[in-house]
Image 1 (cartoon, chains in turn cyan, green, orange):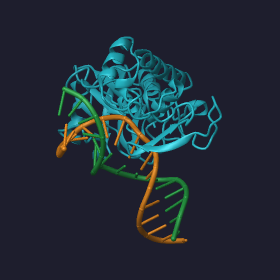
Image 2: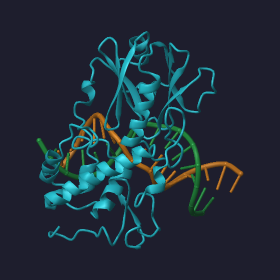
Image 3: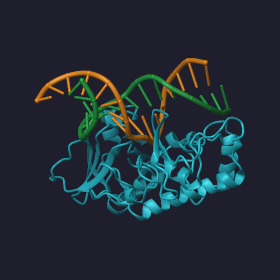
Length: 281
DNA sequence: ATCGTAGCCTGGTAGC
DNA sequence: TGCTACCAGGCTACGA
């Protein structure tokens, strides 16, 4: 389940292995992985073949590589996307969707089991397709005070706001639950009722938990997420809330609970993160 | 404009 | 055993 730290690990891998290379051949094995490239797979291949890669960027969970003609190739890993660097004759992974032959004899592979992710060529760099995606908390230009003000103008649950990529990008279910646990906030707390200090504290925890995860190479639960060399991170050993149902809270010992939220799950400590009561929260 | 939700996907697992 | 139902969840499209 790649979130921002995992995507940044992949970006660094692309920086090391793909930037400076020319794409000598491109093959789309599954058209669904280029679903968001309007003109279709053959256009995708035509636009990329022969292009030189000049840089690798990331905003939130989106990755893009700059190309030598001013265009870019945008990538989202979705839930199960992987970017792998290997020899072209290495055994193909089970869900290989797109391959890029590089001019150093290596191959960049995009594999994706669930096909929530995908790639598309953008005419611009950075891609206008992600103009609506907010900066992420690890971006030097991220403005904490502006984020706090915008969030407090919303009228919604605090976790819903954290997951809104137009407000702050890169936060998914895992890091939202971890940051809320650190902040002792229930996911349904109304954004309008939160104090400035509470939201400032929250965004600080979001940044901290992401930075810590990045230091450990990202989080992995089911080996779906790996870096470009196929290795998993270790951050899942440091989680306090996400996936901890039935385990004692590391802070107070109460049993962590899992609750349905937005058609998925939220994990919280029932003592540290009590359910908001009507009105007063 | 803002908020909330259905649908996209596959495969591992639980339950019968 | 083989079948069905469920779960994981980021993002877009769309309705209210």
